[in-house]
Amino acid sequence: MRIYFKTLLTATATCALAWAAPATAQSTPTEAPAEVEALDPVKVPAVVVKDVDPAMWVVKDADTTIYLFGSVHILKPGLGWFDDEVKTAFDGSDQLVLELVEPPAAEVQALFGKLAMDQQGKALRSKMNDADRAVYDTAMGKLGLPTAAFDPFDPWAAAITLSLLAIQKSGFDPNSGVEKQLTAAAKAAKKPIDGLETTEFQLGVFDTLPEAEQIAFLVETAKQIDDAGTNMDKMVDMWAAADTDTLGQLMNEGLTSRTLYDALLTKRNANWAKWISARMEKPGVTFMAVGAGHLAGPTSVQSLLPAYGLNAMRVAY
Image (cartoon, rainbow, N blue to C red; front, side, top):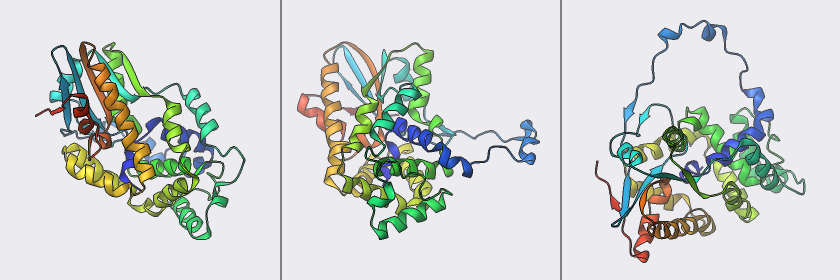
């Protein structure tokens, strides 16, 4: 399971779980054990908040400022990142810009049903050879799922769902992700929220991959199912410590397929660098948060800005 994919597409993964709910319900308790229900709430230990300082950059000219903050879409509770210079930059901004403004659940589910399901009705497991199917079946068993639970899915959708289920099992919560917190703060402050991409575009990034690439992604995810939580912890530790160099190295190691690398990083980063250039023509202050993987490595958004005569400066804090 490549670390990069864990930083991508919250809406996609959440929707995948919604579709998978009937299949996964049997492995999820519907009632709390009696001893949990009887637990005195006063005695439940509070989450200890750990202060972390992820990397942030700023691009500015005489009348325009854009802050670039690397996000992680799903985190464990208890990380205090929304303070210090990050909070100051956010509070002083006129708008929040995210990869995606999460649309209503019904809209996402409709798109997921259109793009993530095999339209010819060919079962997922029939697309794999015997060796790959065995790896996949084993991973499904480790998560307590029937092997045929995701048979209606395209391979990429099954991979994202497996990945999210595995890291949630390790304590990660989509509701603790950076975008969720920033969105809530922007709504409370009545700041406009804009998205760089649409849900349909993000789903299409995966859906347009060749089937062989999708299956390879799925099998790789299944092979690393036992290490999902540990690998995610490592990635979050690098993000929390603003270790963008090591994070960039992991991006390169994880995306061995040039097709995947270009689809998920290179092309999207180029689009966003162009967006920043256009936005610099308008006065104001923008707080822009995108997946941390997009702000690391040789094709990071910042590395593409000099072509537009712009430079991103690291914010020290």
